[in-house]
Length: 77
Length: 214
Image (tube, rainbow over all chains, first blue to last red; front, top):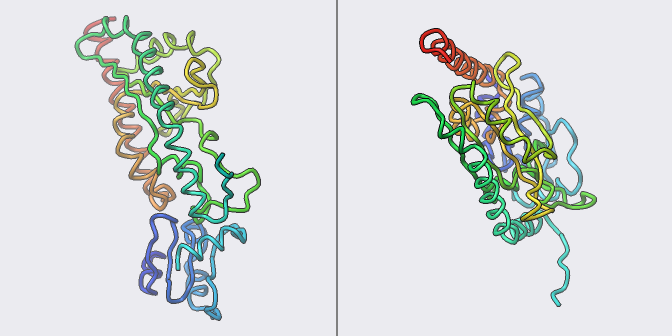
């Protein structure tokens, strides 16, 4: 299965403004670059991994700064 | 006097940049007009001597607001301005708020057009763009139109016409759409198209050389 199909099936939508795969309910966001570079298994593992759901979890190749995280949290709701 | 605004959050960064854009816009428009007028004037003698099948088109453009913001962001993951970035952001960091593209067909006219412009823009910085699978390059230059502004940089390109027209579609489809731009398959398809365009241009040149003469 293609990685985009895996994400869509797990209720992730593509955000064109930020180039992110986002699931607001799970509060997780994958950058396009991360999805491109990582194997399918790793994407699935991150989709399934437990987070406390209090804040957003960002899966980026290069860890976003606190400022960028704060901004994205604000924008993604 | 208005109090200096501070950048507190992301939306404010974007809004401040939009504000900056519209402050710069009248000057950017004048630069585009200046550049286009000069380039038209410098290439006029070539235009008058074109053969019936040859073309030379000069197009200017002012970068659109959102496009300028996106360019400033660059290829950063998450496409988000960092409120903690030291030094902040300014659209003056961009090299191409105003630009002119000279579309030329066939390629044998490219060098002629490029030469006609180089004397006037001798201090502009070349930054060629590679395309296709070989060593083909588009001539591209950055610099200042000092008569209008010494703060806002602009660019001009001398581009094979078929390639330039293809880029008008490809630019939105790939350059501005990250998943397509990152896709190996789409990059390869783009190269196939560019190689075909190069091949058509070369074929036309050979045909004219062999059948009509210089």
